Each structure stands twice: as C-alpha cells, then as structure tokens.
Image 1 (cartoon, rainbow, N blue to C red):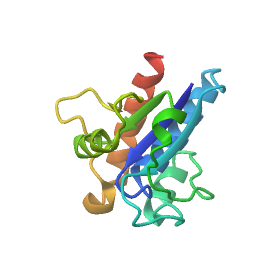
Image 2: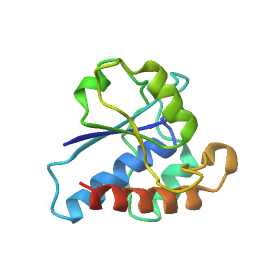
Image 3: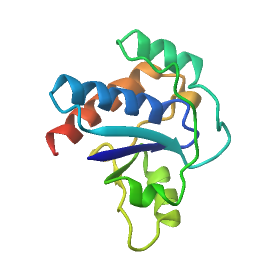
Length: 143
C-alpha cells in the first residue's frame, strides 16, 4: 500500500502526516505501508519543513528533518494507492488535477469540517498534530 499525504505547501501538515502515518504503521506491525507527502503548490519545493512544525513534531517523537517539499505531479495519481488531502480546499485542488482514470483522493478526517487547519496561518501546531494523529489512526483502522 502506497499513501500520499497532500497539503498546500508541503512544509507543515503533509510532512507531519507522512511521518505520523509511517510511525503508526510501523508501531502497528504494518511497516510495508509506504508513505510520502507533497503540496499542491510549488512555493516551497526543495525546502525543509517549517521550523515550528519540526519542533512541535519532535516534542511528540516525530522526526521531520531530512524531508524536502515537493509539488504534486501527474504521475502521483498512478504511483499511489491512496491520496489523502489535509483539508477540503486541497481535496478540491487535487480533483481538478486528477486524470479521470486515476486514484480518487480522500480527506484525512471524516468530521464535519473535514480539515486540519493550516498551522502556518493559525500558529496552532499542536492542534494540527492532534488532528493528524486522529486521522492517521482512523486511516490505519480502515486499511
């Protein structure tokens, strides 16, 4: 199983979701699940995750250093079995880019708002991580 986590810039939510899902999968004896992340924009391509997200993630035992931002590519729709959007706006953007016969994206959270608020703007990195952990647990339970 190959899973792609997607947010806007690939420096906060999606790299955190990548590492959280990978960690939870390994802890649950499902290390064969491959996880990657990207953004719908290319604003931060090649950059490390955002410093405050690295710090907040590290406080929970997740290591984001070493990851680099990249933009969603057309071939991602065939390379991944599951493409996961971190909010409704990202889901909409992915749908606009998705070839008709490719992987159908899903949202990380099945809650009314359906979103992990972007901590780059909200500054609430702990809230984002709480929601990412909840979503990743649910995702693994459904696999």
